[in-house]
Length: 410
Image (cartoon, rainbow, N blue to C red; front, side):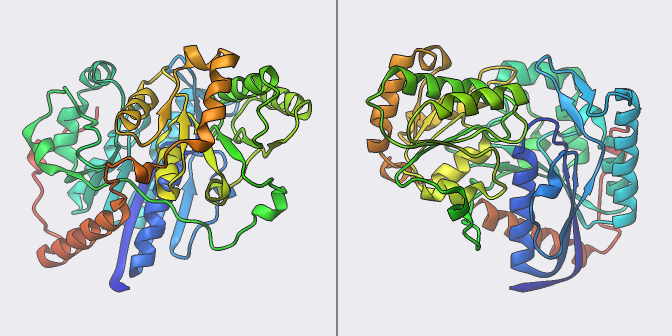
Protein backbone atom coordinates (compact mmCIF):
# COMPACT_ATOMS: atom_id res chain seq x y z
CA UNK A 1 0.00 0.00 0.00
CA UNK A 2 1.41 3.38 -1.02
CA UNK A 3 1.10 6.57 1.00
CA UNK A 4 -0.41 9.79 -0.28
CA UNK A 5 0.05 12.40 2.41
CA UNK A 6 -3.27 14.01 3.33
CA UNK A 7 -4.68 13.68 -0.18
CA UNK A 8 -8.39 14.35 -0.51
CA UNK A 9 -10.85 13.21 -3.14
CA UNK A 10 -14.39 14.54 -3.39
CA UNK A 11 -16.99 12.55 -5.34
CA UNK A 12 -20.44 13.62 -6.51
CA UNK A 13 -23.32 11.19 -6.98
CA UNK A 14 -26.64 12.84 -7.84
CA UNK A 15 -28.74 9.72 -7.02
CA UNK A 16 -32.22 10.59 -8.21
CA UNK A 17 -33.23 7.08 -9.28
CA UNK A 18 -31.94 3.74 -8.05
CA UNK A 19 -28.68 2.78 -6.39
CA UNK A 20 -26.27 2.64 -9.32
CA UNK A 21 -24.47 5.94 -8.90
CA UNK A 22 -23.85 5.65 -5.17
CA UNK A 23 -22.71 2.02 -5.39
CA UNK A 24 -20.32 2.87 -8.24
CA UNK A 25 -18.82 5.78 -6.27
CA UNK A 26 -18.56 3.60 -3.16
CA UNK A 27 -16.69 0.87 -5.06
CA UNK A 28 -14.19 3.41 -6.41
CA UNK A 29 -13.74 5.08 -3.02
CA UNK A 30 -13.12 1.77 -1.26
CA UNK A 31 -10.53 0.73 -3.83
CA UNK A 32 -8.68 4.02 -3.46
CA UNK A 33 -8.40 3.93 0.34
CA UNK A 34 -7.33 0.28 0.15
CA UNK A 35 -4.52 1.20 -2.24
CA UNK A 36 -3.32 4.43 -0.63
CA UNK A 37 -2.60 5.34 2.97
CA UNK A 38 -3.22 8.96 3.87
CA UNK A 39 -5.98 9.32 1.28
CA UNK A 40 -9.52 10.24 2.30
CA UNK A 41 -12.66 10.26 0.16
CA UNK A 42 -15.87 12.19 0.73
CA UNK A 43 -18.95 11.35 -1.34
CA UNK A 44 -21.72 13.89 -1.89
CA UNK A 45 -24.88 11.86 -2.36
CA UNK A 46 -28.56 12.53 -2.86
CA UNK A 47 -29.52 8.91 -2.11
CA UNK A 48 -32.34 8.43 0.38
CA UNK A 49 -30.64 5.33 1.78
CA UNK A 50 -26.93 6.20 1.65
CA UNK A 51 -26.77 5.44 5.37
CA UNK A 52 -27.84 1.82 4.75
CA UNK A 53 -24.42 1.01 3.33
CA UNK A 54 -21.23 0.42 5.28
CA UNK A 55 -18.23 2.56 4.36
CA UNK A 56 -14.56 1.76 4.93
CA UNK A 57 -12.35 3.90 7.15
CA UNK A 58 -11.40 7.18 5.45
CA UNK A 59 -14.54 7.08 3.29
CA UNK A 60 -17.54 9.15 4.33
CA UNK A 61 -20.55 10.79 2.72
CA UNK A 62 -22.46 14.04 2.91
CA UNK A 63 -26.19 13.72 2.34
CA UNK A 64 -27.87 16.44 0.29
CA UNK A 65 -31.69 16.73 0.00
CA UNK A 66 -33.16 13.91 -2.05
CA UNK A 67 -35.14 14.37 -5.22
CA UNK A 68 -36.99 11.80 -7.30
CA UNK A 69 -36.71 11.54 -11.07
CA UNK A 70 -40.06 10.74 -12.62
CA UNK A 71 -40.55 8.65 -15.76
CA UNK A 72 -41.39 11.88 -17.61
CA UNK A 73 -37.86 13.11 -16.88
CA UNK A 74 -39.06 15.77 -14.44
CA UNK A 75 -37.93 15.96 -10.82
CA UNK A 76 -39.84 16.29 -7.58
CA UNK A 77 -38.77 16.78 -3.97
CA UNK A 78 -38.84 13.78 -1.66
CA UNK A 79 -40.71 15.98 0.82
CA UNK A 80 -44.11 17.15 -0.39
CA UNK A 81 -43.93 20.37 1.64
CA UNK A 82 -40.68 21.60 0.02
CA UNK A 83 -40.81 23.14 -3.45
CA UNK A 84 -38.48 21.52 -6.00
CA UNK A 85 -36.85 24.90 -6.76
CA UNK A 86 -35.95 25.33 -3.08
CA UNK A 87 -34.62 21.78 -2.91
CA UNK A 88 -32.43 22.31 -5.97
CA UNK A 89 -31.11 25.59 -4.57
CA UNK A 90 -30.21 23.90 -1.28
CA UNK A 91 -28.44 21.07 -3.09
CA UNK A 92 -26.36 23.45 -5.20
CA UNK A 93 -25.37 25.55 -2.18
CA UNK A 94 -24.46 22.51 -0.06
CA UNK A 95 -22.34 21.00 -2.82
CA UNK A 96 -20.37 24.22 -3.25
CA UNK A 97 -19.95 24.77 0.50
CA UNK A 98 -18.83 21.18 1.04
CA UNK A 99 -16.24 21.49 -1.72
CA UNK A 100 -14.90 24.78 -0.34
CA UNK A 101 -14.58 23.34 3.17
CA UNK A 102 -13.15 19.97 2.14
CA UNK A 103 -10.64 21.46 -0.33
CA UNK A 104 -10.16 18.34 -2.45
CA UNK A 105 -7.17 17.59 -4.63
CA UNK A 106 -9.40 15.71 -7.09
CA UNK A 107 -13.12 16.09 -7.77
CA UNK A 108 -14.82 13.10 -9.46
CA UNK A 109 -18.32 13.62 -10.86
CA UNK A 110 -20.38 10.52 -11.65
CA UNK A 111 -22.26 10.39 -14.96
CA UNK A 112 -23.98 13.81 -14.99
CA UNK A 113 -21.31 16.25 -16.31
CA UNK A 114 -22.87 19.38 -14.79
CA UNK A 115 -24.82 17.56 -12.10
CA UNK A 116 -28.57 17.40 -11.85
CA UNK A 117 -29.99 20.58 -13.40
CA UNK A 118 -26.44 22.01 -13.51
CA UNK A 119 -25.98 21.92 -9.74
CA UNK A 120 -22.21 21.17 -9.80
CA UNK A 121 -21.21 23.69 -12.47
CA UNK A 122 -20.37 26.47 -10.02
CA UNK A 123 -18.43 23.98 -7.89
CA UNK A 124 -16.41 22.81 -10.90
CA UNK A 125 -15.47 26.38 -11.76
CA UNK A 126 -14.54 27.22 -8.17
CA UNK A 127 -12.42 24.11 -7.68
CA UNK A 128 -10.56 24.47 -10.98
CA UNK A 129 -9.66 28.03 -10.07
CA UNK A 130 -8.03 26.62 -6.93
CA UNK A 131 -6.00 23.99 -8.77
CA UNK A 132 -8.20 20.98 -8.08
CA UNK A 133 -8.08 18.25 -10.73
CA UNK A 134 -11.51 17.44 -12.14
CA UNK A 135 -12.70 14.09 -13.48
CA UNK A 136 -15.92 13.04 -15.19
CA UNK A 137 -16.74 9.35 -14.79
CA UNK A 138 -19.01 7.93 -17.50
CA UNK A 139 -20.74 4.57 -17.69
CA UNK A 140 -19.77 2.25 -20.53
CA UNK A 141 -23.16 3.10 -22.06
CA UNK A 142 -24.96 6.41 -21.50
CA UNK A 143 -27.96 6.30 -23.82
CA UNK A 144 -28.77 6.06 -27.50
CA UNK A 145 -26.71 8.60 -29.50
CA UNK A 146 -29.87 10.35 -30.70
CA UNK A 147 -31.33 10.90 -27.23
CA UNK A 148 -27.99 11.85 -25.68
CA UNK A 149 -27.17 14.29 -28.49
CA UNK A 150 -30.54 16.00 -28.15
CA UNK A 151 -30.16 16.38 -24.38
CA UNK A 152 -26.52 17.50 -24.41
CA UNK A 153 -26.79 19.91 -27.36
CA UNK A 154 -29.59 21.73 -25.59
CA UNK A 155 -27.37 22.27 -22.54
CA UNK A 156 -24.02 22.73 -24.36
CA UNK A 157 -22.69 19.84 -22.31
CA UNK A 158 -19.78 18.76 -24.52
CA UNK A 159 -18.40 22.30 -24.65
CA UNK A 160 -18.59 22.52 -20.87
CA UNK A 161 -16.91 19.13 -20.46
CA UNK A 162 -14.04 20.35 -22.66
CA UNK A 163 -13.66 23.46 -20.52
CA UNK A 164 -14.19 22.12 -17.02
CA UNK A 165 -12.75 18.58 -16.92
CA UNK A 166 -9.14 17.47 -16.91
CA UNK A 167 -9.95 13.79 -17.45
CA UNK A 168 -12.89 11.70 -18.63
CA UNK A 169 -12.89 8.13 -17.32
CA UNK A 170 -15.07 5.62 -19.14
CA UNK A 171 -16.01 2.70 -16.89
CA UNK A 172 -15.65 0.00 -19.51
CA UNK A 173 -13.23 -1.29 -22.18
CA UNK A 174 -12.89 0.40 -25.56
CA UNK A 175 -13.96 -2.70 -27.50
CA UNK A 176 -17.27 -2.99 -25.61
CA UNK A 177 -18.94 0.35 -26.32
CA UNK A 178 -18.24 4.05 -26.82
CA UNK A 179 -20.63 6.08 -24.63
CA UNK A 180 -20.08 9.14 -26.86
CA UNK A 181 -20.71 7.21 -30.09
CA UNK A 182 -21.88 9.34 -33.05
CA UNK A 183 -21.65 12.61 -31.10
CA UNK A 184 -19.67 15.60 -32.35
CA UNK A 185 -17.07 15.38 -29.59
CA UNK A 186 -14.48 18.19 -29.23
CA UNK A 187 -10.87 17.08 -29.69
CA UNK A 188 -10.03 18.13 -26.13
CA UNK A 189 -12.63 15.70 -24.83
CA UNK A 190 -11.37 12.88 -27.05
CA UNK A 191 -7.77 13.50 -25.96
CA UNK A 192 -8.70 13.44 -22.28
CA UNK A 193 -10.89 10.33 -22.43
CA UNK A 194 -9.54 7.10 -20.94
CA UNK A 195 -11.20 3.69 -21.05
CA UNK A 196 -10.43 2.15 -17.66
CA UNK A 197 -12.29 -1.18 -17.94
CA UNK A 198 -15.28 -2.46 -15.97
CA UNK A 199 -15.37 -1.94 -12.21
CA UNK A 200 -15.04 -5.36 -10.50
CA UNK A 201 -17.04 -6.31 -7.44
CA UNK A 202 -15.91 -8.37 -4.46
CA UNK A 203 -17.64 -10.68 -2.01
CA UNK A 204 -18.10 -8.98 1.37
CA UNK A 205 -15.79 -10.16 4.13
CA UNK A 206 -18.70 -11.13 6.37
CA UNK A 207 -21.07 -13.73 4.88
CA UNK A 208 -24.54 -12.97 6.25
CA UNK A 209 -26.53 -14.89 3.62
CA UNK A 210 -27.41 -17.69 6.07
CA UNK A 211 -29.84 -15.29 7.75
CA UNK A 212 -31.92 -15.25 4.55
CA UNK A 213 -32.42 -19.05 4.60
CA UNK A 214 -31.52 -19.22 0.93
CA UNK A 215 -32.25 -22.49 -0.90
CA UNK A 216 -29.45 -24.29 -2.76
CA UNK A 217 -28.95 -23.80 -6.50
CA UNK A 218 -31.26 -20.82 -6.84
CA UNK A 219 -31.81 -18.38 -9.69
CA UNK A 220 -31.57 -14.82 -8.44
CA UNK A 221 -33.93 -12.18 -9.84
CA UNK A 222 -32.64 -8.71 -9.02
CA UNK A 223 -34.11 -5.32 -9.91
CA UNK A 224 -31.30 -3.17 -8.50
CA UNK A 225 -32.88 -0.27 -6.64
CA UNK A 226 -36.27 -1.57 -7.74
CA UNK A 227 -37.91 1.68 -8.76
CA UNK A 228 -38.70 0.23 -12.18
CA UNK A 229 -38.32 -3.48 -11.43
CA UNK A 230 -41.91 -4.54 -10.76
CA UNK A 231 -42.52 -5.63 -14.36
CA UNK A 232 -39.48 -7.92 -14.34
CA UNK A 233 -40.58 -9.59 -11.11
CA UNK A 234 -44.12 -10.00 -12.43
CA UNK A 235 -42.88 -11.59 -15.68
CA UNK A 236 -40.82 -14.18 -13.81
CA UNK A 237 -43.64 -15.01 -11.42
CA UNK A 238 -46.07 -15.31 -14.34
CA UNK A 239 -43.77 -17.89 -15.95
CA UNK A 240 -43.72 -19.92 -12.74
CA UNK A 241 -47.50 -19.70 -12.47
CA UNK A 242 -47.83 -20.80 -16.10
CA UNK A 243 -45.35 -23.70 -16.03
CA UNK A 244 -45.47 -25.79 -12.84
CA UNK A 245 -42.58 -27.89 -14.19
CA UNK A 246 -40.24 -25.00 -13.36
CA UNK A 247 -38.82 -26.33 -10.14
CA UNK A 248 -35.56 -24.39 -9.91
CA UNK A 249 -35.67 -22.29 -6.72
CA UNK A 250 -36.08 -18.57 -7.22
CA UNK A 251 -34.82 -15.76 -4.98
CA UNK A 252 -36.37 -12.36 -5.76
CA UNK A 253 -34.84 -9.10 -4.50
CA UNK A 254 -37.27 -6.25 -5.37
CA UNK A 255 -35.02 -3.47 -4.02
CA UNK A 256 -35.68 -0.57 -1.64
CA UNK A 257 -37.36 1.81 -4.10
CA UNK A 258 -40.12 -0.43 -5.40
CA UNK A 259 -43.62 0.89 -4.72
CA UNK A 260 -45.25 -0.69 -1.67
CA UNK A 261 -48.24 -1.97 -3.61
CA UNK A 262 -45.97 -3.67 -6.14
CA UNK A 263 -43.83 -5.18 -3.38
CA UNK A 264 -46.90 -6.52 -1.57
CA UNK A 265 -48.20 -8.07 -4.80
CA UNK A 266 -44.86 -9.83 -5.36
CA UNK A 267 -44.95 -11.25 -1.83
CA UNK A 268 -48.55 -12.39 -2.30
CA UNK A 269 -47.87 -14.21 -5.56
CA UNK A 270 -44.62 -15.74 -4.30
CA UNK A 271 -46.44 -17.34 -1.37
CA UNK A 272 -48.66 -19.28 -3.75
CA UNK A 273 -45.62 -20.88 -5.44
CA UNK A 274 -43.12 -23.44 -4.21
CA UNK A 275 -39.42 -22.67 -3.92
CA UNK A 276 -39.78 -18.89 -4.25
CA UNK A 277 -38.07 -16.66 -1.69
CA UNK A 278 -38.40 -12.86 -1.53
CA UNK A 279 -35.72 -10.68 0.10
CA UNK A 280 -36.83 -7.06 0.06
CA UNK A 281 -33.34 -5.55 0.16
CA UNK A 282 -29.77 -6.54 0.91
CA UNK A 283 -27.05 -3.90 1.23
CA UNK A 284 -24.45 -6.55 0.39
CA UNK A 285 -26.13 -8.12 -2.63
CA UNK A 286 -22.74 -9.35 -3.85
CA UNK A 287 -22.88 -12.28 -1.42
CA UNK A 288 -26.34 -13.27 -2.67
CA UNK A 289 -25.16 -13.07 -6.28
CA UNK A 290 -22.07 -15.15 -5.54
CA UNK A 291 -24.14 -18.07 -4.21
CA UNK A 292 -26.63 -18.04 -7.10
CA UNK A 293 -26.58 -20.53 -9.96
CA UNK A 294 -27.74 -17.91 -12.46
CA UNK A 295 -29.05 -14.33 -12.54
CA UNK A 296 -32.03 -12.54 -14.10
CA UNK A 297 -31.80 -8.75 -14.20
CA UNK A 298 -32.43 -5.63 -16.25
CA UNK A 299 -28.78 -4.93 -17.19
CA UNK A 300 -28.03 -1.85 -15.16
CA UNK A 301 -24.32 -1.11 -14.90
CA UNK A 302 -23.79 -2.49 -11.40
CA UNK A 303 -25.72 -5.71 -12.01
CA UNK A 304 -23.73 -6.29 -15.19
CA UNK A 305 -20.41 -5.75 -13.40
CA UNK A 306 -21.48 -8.15 -10.65
CA UNK A 307 -22.42 -10.85 -13.14
CA UNK A 308 -19.11 -10.68 -15.01
CA UNK A 309 -17.16 -10.36 -11.75
CA UNK A 310 -18.71 -13.53 -10.28
CA UNK A 311 -18.94 -15.24 -13.68
CA UNK A 312 -22.65 -16.14 -13.59
CA UNK A 313 -24.93 -17.20 -16.45
CA UNK A 314 -27.41 -14.38 -16.89
CA UNK A 315 -30.62 -13.41 -18.65
CA UNK A 316 -31.41 -9.73 -19.11
CA UNK A 317 -34.80 -8.15 -19.74
CA UNK A 318 -33.76 -4.51 -20.25
CA UNK A 319 -36.02 -1.51 -19.96
CA UNK A 320 -36.15 0.83 -22.96
CA UNK A 321 -37.59 3.99 -21.38
CA UNK A 322 -36.77 6.68 -20.47
CA UNK A 323 -33.22 5.67 -21.53
CA UNK A 324 -32.00 2.91 -23.82
CA UNK A 325 -28.82 2.32 -21.81
CA UNK A 326 -29.85 -1.12 -20.54
CA UNK A 327 -31.03 -2.28 -23.97
CA UNK A 328 -27.75 -1.26 -25.61
CA UNK A 329 -25.63 -2.91 -22.91
CA UNK A 330 -27.68 -6.12 -22.87
CA UNK A 331 -27.67 -6.37 -26.67
CA UNK A 332 -23.91 -5.82 -26.88
CA UNK A 333 -23.27 -8.37 -24.12
CA UNK A 334 -25.44 -10.88 -25.97
CA UNK A 335 -23.54 -10.25 -29.23
CA UNK A 336 -20.29 -11.04 -27.42
CA UNK A 337 -21.77 -14.21 -25.93
CA UNK A 338 -21.41 -12.94 -22.35
CA UNK A 339 -25.08 -13.09 -21.39
CA UNK A 340 -28.55 -13.71 -22.85
CA UNK A 341 -31.23 -11.13 -23.57
CA UNK A 342 -35.02 -11.33 -23.87
CA UNK A 343 -36.90 -8.24 -24.94
CA UNK A 344 -39.84 -7.12 -22.83
CA UNK A 345 -42.40 -7.91 -25.56
CA UNK A 346 -41.32 -11.56 -25.46
CA UNK A 347 -40.70 -11.69 -21.71
CA UNK A 348 -44.30 -10.69 -21.00
CA UNK A 349 -45.39 -13.93 -22.67
CA UNK A 350 -45.30 -16.52 -19.83
CA UNK A 351 -44.47 -19.37 -22.20
CA UNK A 352 -41.44 -17.57 -23.64
CA UNK A 353 -40.20 -16.52 -20.21
CA UNK A 354 -40.72 -20.11 -19.00
CA UNK A 355 -38.58 -21.43 -21.85
CA UNK A 356 -35.87 -18.93 -20.94
CA UNK A 357 -36.01 -20.02 -17.28
CA UNK A 358 -35.66 -23.69 -18.23
CA UNK A 359 -32.56 -22.92 -20.30
CA UNK A 360 -30.85 -20.40 -18.01
CA UNK A 361 -29.18 -22.73 -15.44
CA UNK A 362 -27.44 -24.52 -18.34
CA UNK A 363 -26.33 -21.35 -20.15
CA UNK A 364 -22.68 -20.44 -20.65
CA UNK A 365 -20.80 -18.30 -18.16
CA UNK A 366 -19.24 -14.99 -19.30
CA UNK A 367 -15.77 -16.56 -19.03
CA UNK A 368 -16.80 -19.13 -21.65
CA UNK A 369 -17.70 -16.53 -24.26
CA UNK A 370 -14.26 -16.29 -25.85
CA UNK A 371 -14.25 -12.51 -25.26
CA UNK A 372 -11.69 -11.27 -22.74
CA UNK A 373 -13.53 -9.38 -20.01
CA UNK A 374 -11.58 -6.34 -18.82
CA UNK A 375 -12.21 -5.97 -15.07
CA UNK A 376 -9.22 -3.73 -14.36
CA UNK A 377 -11.23 -0.55 -13.84
CA UNK A 378 -10.43 -0.01 -10.17
CA UNK A 379 -6.72 -0.66 -10.68
CA UNK A 380 -6.65 1.72 -13.64
CA UNK A 381 -8.41 4.43 -11.63
CA UNK A 382 -5.92 4.02 -8.79
CA UNK A 383 -3.07 4.49 -11.28
CA UNK A 384 -4.68 7.61 -12.73
CA UNK A 385 -5.21 9.07 -9.25
CA UNK A 386 -1.57 8.44 -8.36
CA UNK A 387 -0.45 10.17 -11.57
CA UNK A 388 -2.73 13.14 -10.95
CA UNK A 389 -1.55 13.65 -7.39
CA UNK A 390 2.10 13.27 -8.40
CA UNK A 391 1.56 15.87 -11.12
CA UNK A 392 -0.11 18.21 -8.66
CA UNK A 393 2.75 17.78 -6.20
CA UNK A 394 5.32 18.55 -8.91
CA UNK A 395 3.43 21.52 -10.29
CA UNK A 396 2.34 23.01 -6.99
CA UNK A 397 -0.84 24.92 -6.32
CA UNK A 398 -0.29 27.08 -9.41
CA UNK A 399 -0.82 24.09 -11.71
CA UNK A 400 -1.70 25.28 -15.21
CA UNK A 401 -5.41 25.51 -15.98
CA UNK A 402 -6.86 27.24 -18.99
CA UNK A 403 -9.17 29.46 -16.98
CA UNK A 404 -9.88 31.76 -19.87
CA UNK A 405 -11.85 28.91 -21.49
CA UNK A 406 -14.00 28.16 -18.49
CA UNK A 407 -17.71 28.19 -19.14
CA UNK A 408 -19.11 30.11 -16.20
CA UNK A 409 -22.64 29.27 -15.10
CA UNK A 410 -25.23 31.98 -15.39
